[in-house]
Amino acid sequence: MSGPGVGFEFPTFPVSWMKRDLLLFAASIGATYPDELHFLYELNPKFAAFPTYPIILPFKHTDQEVIDFYARSNSTPIKGVPKFDTKNVLDGERKIEFLKPIPVTSEGRNFEIRSKVLGVYDKGKPGTVVETEQRLVDKDTGETYTRAVGSGFYVGQGGWGGPKGPKTVNYPPPSNRAPDATKITQTTLETALLYRLNGDYNPLHATPEPGIKMGFGGPIIHGLFSWNTAAHAVLQTFGGSDPANLKEFQARFAAPVKPGDKLITEMWKAGNKDREGYEEVRFIVRVEGGKTVLTNGRAMVKVVGKRESKL
Picture (cartoon, rainbow, N blue to C red):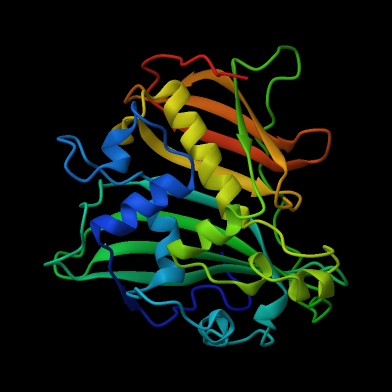
């Protein structure tokens, strides 16, 4: 594919994590006691990273202290397209492929994020979509551990004459039957304040002013919180909470979540299996009594059992 900005490579940057980071992440997305102590307790004999943890590393870098989110987000301009204002960007869609399990600490290794532009799409007055690939790579061996493809929507920053982009591929849930499983997540006024400690310090999720300016009326919860809690729901329900049983995970961000909202994740086994025995699971996440907040939900899971949700 060719077009403005396509193939542009951002500067690489190192990333690191400790066991403590994995514990915080698992706790912040709802890992449960006692069946998921292997995500929550570092001395558990099966202690492991929750598989979607690398999605936070492009925010965290190597930091253990809070950082200036806006300064960090003011990334290298993409050659051939306008410079966009990162204070008005929302997540569009995220997909991650798990190629190798990450170690429980990066100590003794040199990991980095390698990013490039896959497409920049002009949607006119609503804004511009920038699609990027981010790979977590062991710099010394060249091995890729995860590959993530994401799109950022730059609100109100379109109309510069770029391509509109290809039609998106959709993965709707079955319309003729009820979900195979449902998981409830009750957020609180503090949910985003805990999740942001993983390294995503966007003020939009902590203080009312940015959200008021953007028309949300106040702070909203990270889209990636909903995305990661959905991944947890899928893996816990169908994959026995074994990180090896999740091969791919993706969802599209459709609406904001307010602190205190109750999230309902509805999941369907689609019946399609690949050569390795991973089965397609489709899902949506909606706010009780309100909008669907994640659509196009799709995961490839080795189904080993089904946990009944406690509603």
